[in-house]
Image (cartoon, rainbow, N blue to C red):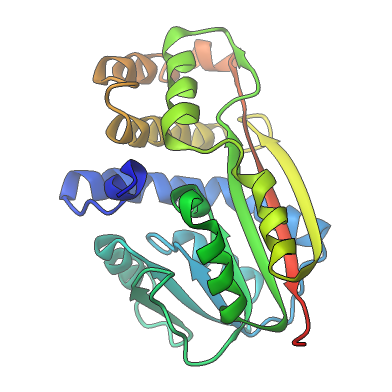
Amino acid sequence: MDKKKAVYQREDAGFVRVVDEFMTYQSQVANTYDRRAIEALGFPRNIKRVLDIGCGNGHHLKNLKALFPDSSWVGIDINSQLIKKAGQLHEGSKDVTFKNISVFDYKPDAPFDAVFSTITLQYLADRMDDFFKQLDLFLKPGGAVFFFESEKSYNAIYPKNPSLVRLCAAIDQVVMDPCITIRIPHYLEKYGFKDIQYYPLIFNQYNADPDLYFKYLEYAARVTQIMAPAEYTAEDLNALLHIIRDKEFKKGMIYNFSGAYVVAKKGAAS
């Protein structure tokens, strides 16, 4: 099994706690960007039945659903502890359900109007053909897809702090696939999707809430240390935590993440 997938399926309390915190901050940072992308790309707003692949703890799904208030959602994820947290977050909701299942094993009762997937293909890079075959089965003709994937952990770092530089290297070498977003349009076209649009972005503390951004950065580092302990050590993590808690250092710091949204529509049945 791929190292990243094996780590993500861990269900011990320490790992789940860190990933749960990371996903919560990540969803809050992503919320503003999701809204911008949906508007800029003209993503359909009349969707009713939606699938979220790799839904994690359900926080991102909650933010997305708020943009489509008349929709019902199904979230799937392979980590049973995160699915349990998602169910607790959405307890009492009649139009959100969660399933602890792999995307390759899931068989919906009916096709969806739209499918969302956020930083999930990073873990499926060796099964892209299988994934897009499944995606085709999940959607109605004309149904929409919405992807977000990280491309690179930084475009600029200032000042060149060693712990930040090592964090970026570990993310790009081990945790993320910086080429994943440019592969998505190829597979969408291969499997008959139309109206493919690519929307790149850069985000940092200057176009997001600074306190929130640094909490996100902290937990990105904590997850990286778990996933790549040889490349990003506990000492590296402690050094990073020290500098991002320094208010004066943060005032002059620049640290950019980059990524891209990709949207498309399923072609009509032949």
